[in-house]
Image (cartoon, rainbow, N blue to C red; front, side, top):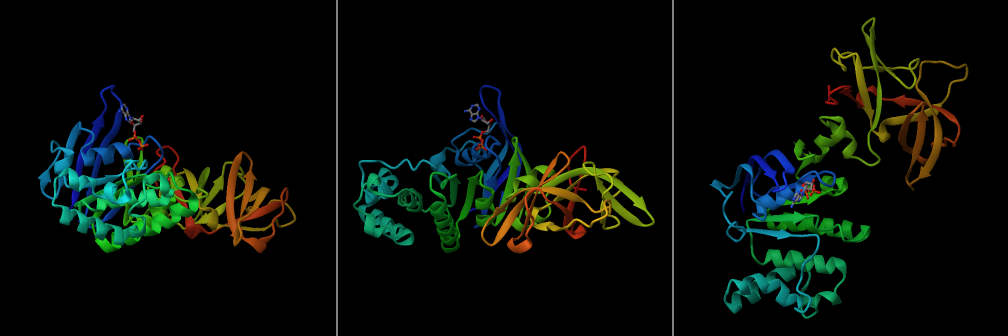
Length: 363
Ligand code: ADP
């Protein structure tokens, strides 16, 4: 097992593309860290630099105390599992799994034992004599993991290993990977664009955007306290609602009024907005309550028109419109708002997030 440290790591490709600007990250021994962000944010490049498959343009990469910037991949004691399983089609499961050890000319007995042990861990023994095309997608991915497992690496790297699988299998493999990590306790670094996968798998997640790290933390902390509007809307499905608006302070009260409905307001915790006068208010769909519109017009309460109600089984998504802003609320199913009706929106001030209008950073 090993600790992996990136210090100011940068990657500029030969054509001048800066894929990774400046990543600093300390992965503890035995930790499961997930790099997550939209396509093109630099997560695979970061992982490939750790693996040694891409050179590092600046900064330092350490495995334990050793700087490994210039150490070739085979000498880093790392195993990587890809999205494309890259299994040898003409080889059996057993031979695919033992391939790396055969290449190292390890004794036959040792290869047999290690392959056997990995197969037991992954439940592959009954498939030993099959070739990859006789396997399902999930089984193939398990063989690819098994092939990495037999090498007993100090660090596992995973590059979107589940994205070829259908939703049900992906959920199943996610649970298997989490269990595997618990059993082995090996350091794992995992790349995905899927925020749900990141939230469920990672001890910590690293949210990346445009070649930079936005936030590092325990998934629930990052979800509850996003540092900016990017992280706020990237994690969570449907994403956090954002409402630009103004802050007013009167008689010890701090109020927010959305630009889309300036006559309405929400009373906030007194110090919530600091000294800001223009903010973006963020509220997650599960923190918008829906009430009837009080007859008699302007009550100062935020209101919106219901555009669509999407039942999800246990609860429902209510798509709303307030002027030119679209919002989504997640409510209990029996709440009963109807399409085209007007409703009031109840926002709990303890569950709102406030961001600076210009920097989009959390206040
Ligand atoms: P992600 O894994 O987050 O989808 P990547 O790390 O694959 O992102 O890519 C980050 C950026 O680097 C993208 O803009 C991509 O187009 C660019 N990139 C990736 N590989 C190369 C390459 N070999 N040469 C030039 N640019 C590249």
